[in-house]
Image 1 (cartoon, rainbow, N blue to C red):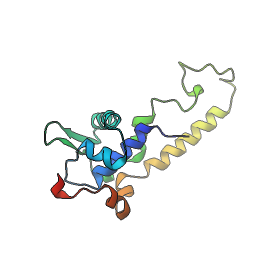
Image 2: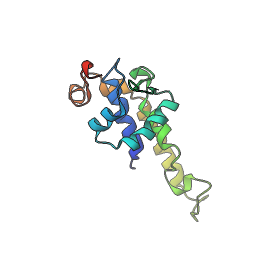
Image 3: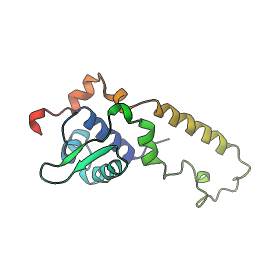
Image 4: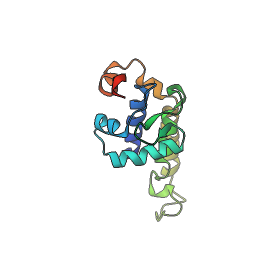
Amino acid sequence: MRLTTRTNLAMRALMFCAVNPGLTVRKSDVAAACNASENHLGLVINQLAQAGFIHTTRGRHGGMRLGRAPEEISVGAVFRLLESDLPFAECFSPAENTCPLAGVCRLNATLCKALNAFYATLDAVTLADLTRDNTALQAILCRPADAA
């Protein structure tokens, strides 16, 4: 299994916001700190905002900040938002499935069970779990308050 760049960027952006509580952070700051394309990050930020994970503000002093407390943002929910439209395997997509084994293959049920376990594990982890007392992460992502 490999995560998409979207999901990776979403988690980086959320962690950036979480280690900078009370600050409105700019997309350019997140992109620079996370080695990401501003354009690609902009698409991810839009999805996160539509789902309520972050609040965005336009304009000269605009940017983004968390839309919920870090303890209320489950990693599983973020992953589902960004990964759910991509079928794990061809047989997971009724519209695109051309597998001749569909209907008799037992691998699909096993993969479903594994994916459910994967998401259950991620559901138990919050953004706060990833950022709280993580001084090394904070050293990389934390912006001084006067840089706002």
